[in-house]
Amino acid sequence: MRFSIRARLKSFQYAFAGIAYMLRTQHNAWLHLIATFVVVATGFALRISASDWRWLVVAIVLVWVAETINTAFEHLCDVVQPEFHASVQRSKDIAAGAVLICVIGAVVIGAQVFAPYVLAL
Ligand SMILES: Nc1ncnc2c1ncn2[C@@H]1O[C@H](COP(=O)(O)OP(=O)(O)OP(=O)(O)O)[C@@H](O)[C@H]1O
Image 1 (cartoon, rainbow, N blue to C red):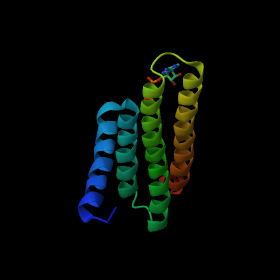
Image 2: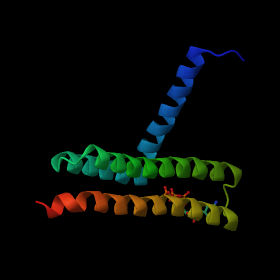
Image 3: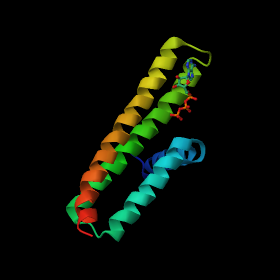
Image 4: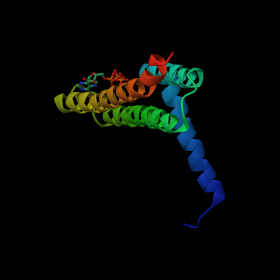
């Protein structure tokens, strides 16, 4: 197939549709959104440095990527095995565990970034 700008724009559109669907339907994504706003607002309020912003961006992106892949994975599981299956249970729980690991990492990064600014107030 030949390269086409129109097809590339379409694939961006599909990706945005996926993100929009996740934001509409996933309650955990709402919590990530609130956390993202709080972290970004705190970053501006404390006037953190450019290098500290980099860490926050990494932490925020880490959580959103994990949640996005987890959501896609859950949907795939529901198609492959709509009825109860112990392996699906394990798989979904492990995928949710991946999100939790990222959230814990993000909290640690956030605490390390903000602590010096808060202590200097
Ligand atoms: N087909 C299934 N077979 C067995 N257990 C399942 C199945 N579907 C879901 N579960 C169990 O229920 C839990 C919740 O599954 P569900 O698909 O509702 O995810 P969710 O609560 O929407 O997850 P998230 O909080 O990430 O949005 C899973 O972690 C798993 O333990």
